[in-house]
Image (cartoon, rainbow, N blue to C red; front, side, top):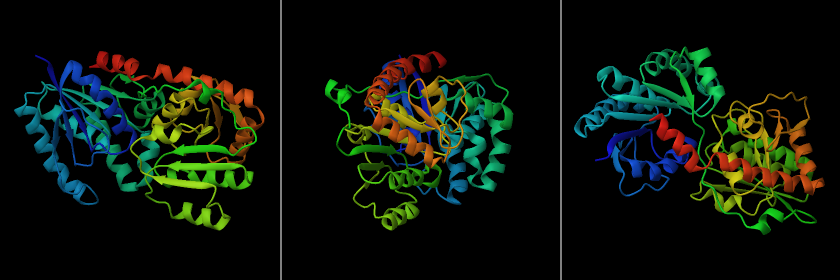
Length: 376
């Protein structure tokens, strides 16, 4: 009989942590009886048939309802663990992690595994109340868990320094589904044609897509930009596109099911974020052979593109890292220069395509699942 485990998350929407869960589930069901427990019924990714799905609170989990529903979720999740006789509880994202810490308080025989997915001291400052609340709750409940891990060494350092986590902290990077890339796609070079640039991420200010739009506007003709992601807060983006007359150069796809379908066929991938936890989208782009230009934000890009070796950059400069190009956060001029570098040096474009494919192998689902299973 397989050991029973519970995976706890807010939902299985289109976010990075949710994508990680969706990639791990097909592997987990081979070794465990898996119970997927979600705060609400928002489901973007496919779930294997043998996974037992429990929706803990089908009501709204927004605004003030989050607080009231959280108490219901605690009761219902603990009931699932008790009724199904589950002895290992694994959580992703902050609210599920805090709930998992509460589970440990209620029943010390349940093994609790907590996974932080963002750089907390930056990500939680979007709301003063939220930041103060998590500064209080995270040290209490994360330290109750048996295992705490994240997807970045920088996140672990932040948890220790600013949130007083005393537990030994492990790092397990996000997995990526390795896609077969044709040789013709690898050798294709954007000579005497439009250069296709793509970026993936929710249209929200922290992703700073405006920086890419400003770069495209400065570069002039000959470039086409595709922004893939849920359009949550796109007013400033739409206004800039209209103001600069970029309607024919920029395409916003909205939320999509299959990101790879949009990545393939482009020339350059750009990550423009001001902060990240560990950007899955870089790995997804590398897995289809796209050369990468990324801001050196906390956290993730430096680990992926330069094996976490520190760099120094002046304004307007870019850095040729081991597996891609790094620029400073919100440095439009550096992005322009990096794009022009790829345009004017097709041999380097081809070189970084090959480096992307090589680097993506390290983060394959098979490799990451081995580490995750060992942790469990």
